[in-house]
Every structure is written in C-alpha cells, then in structure tokens.
Image 1: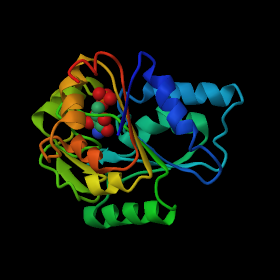
Image 2: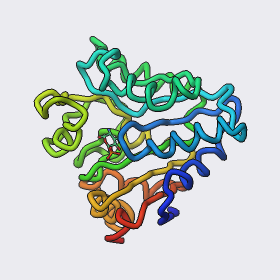
Image 3: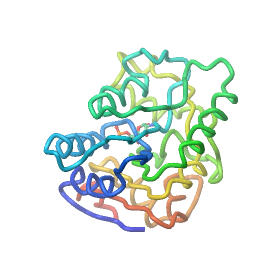
Image 4: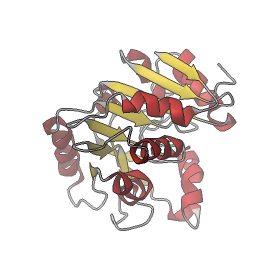
Length: 233
Ligand code: GLP
C-alpha cells in the first residue's frame, strides 16, 4: 500500500488515474465530495489536450435504493453531472429502482465482468471507514448486494437532501470483494473528519469494523490524503 500525503490530492489522484486512461479502459467511479477535485483535474487535462476519454467506459460503485435514476441525488445523476456527461463517458451502475434487487446485483456484476473488469477504482471513505456503501460489519468477501445505512452515514449525507429523513435507508453497493477485484485502487481522503478512518484503514487491523482496512490485502492500492486527513497516521 502506497500512502501519498499531499496538499494537491486532486492532481496526485488524477496522475494515478490518467495512467490507466486509454481506449478500452474501464474506470470505477465514486460519488461524494472527495473525488470532485480529481474529476475537475481530469477534465482540465482533457481540455488541455493531454488526455482523451475516447473508448473509455465507467461503472459507479453504489446507489440509493428507491430513488429514481432521474432524482438529482441518485448517484447515477450525480456522477453524470459531476463527470461522465462532461467527459463523454458511458456509465453503468446499480439501478436503485430495480424490482428484483438480487437480479440487478447479478446483472451489474456480470456487466463489470463482461467489460473485462475495472482497471482503476477511485474511492472516497466514510467517517466510519466505509467504502462504497459497505458499512462496518460488511463481509470482507462480499459481492454487490443491498445494505442498510447507519444513522451516522445518513447524517453525513443529509447535506445533499432537504433533511436527514429524506436520505434513503437502503442501498445497493459493490461488495468489498468486488472492490478488491479492481486492478488498481485509488482512495482519496481530505479533511480532519476523515483522519480516524484513514488511520484505521492504513494502520489498524484488517477488520470488518473498518471496511476500508480490507484494502491492506490488495496488491496495488494508493491512498491520496491531505495533511488533515493524514493527521492521525
Ligand atoms: C458516500 C459514498 C461513498 C463516499 C462517502 C464519502 O457514503 N457512498 O462512496 O466515499 O460518501 O463521501 P465524501 O467524499 O463526500 O465525504
């Protein structure tokens, strides 16, 4: 595991991602605030003519269950608005409106496999150490399935909704085992609120209590953290 402490996490993570961008590449994308500077930097490089997204495909990690895809806070809408529509990249993700959720989870896993697997997976991290929506207690070998959000995560994500009551309780998320299948994982964390989770993920025991700690088992992981998020390392 490589840990880069930098005051320019967007640029450092964009460097790591850019190395994988070529026709036929498959990107794993994350929503949330942490990846935004990475997307902005990748788009800047495209605009400068130093990067091309031609022939690149993408998958999102997770989705709220029960939110229509057209809802402005569905992760499908968020990733298109933040990155893929602007980049001209076709994106697939779990369908939060699926009637048969296990069948949708299987379809999504099969779609990733049919694309040849994920070349590079970008991740944020929750304050409780979750990645995707794999909350503490998630099986380290889990595949895409439904999960129940903790009150803390719903509170953390309430800023995107009018009230915490509007944050969906259930989600469909890649499992930890699914995330481990990506060939390179790049996790971005910024701010002091992430410091404890980053320390537990990097230096703590591999444990379902900190789902991100499972990344210690992956052969090619890059943590990109700002000095505040690194303050408990
Ligand atoms: C959500 C997402 C995660 C994300 C986390 C942290 O729970 N499902 O993928 O990493 O939020 O978000 P942020 O980067 O906004 O702190």
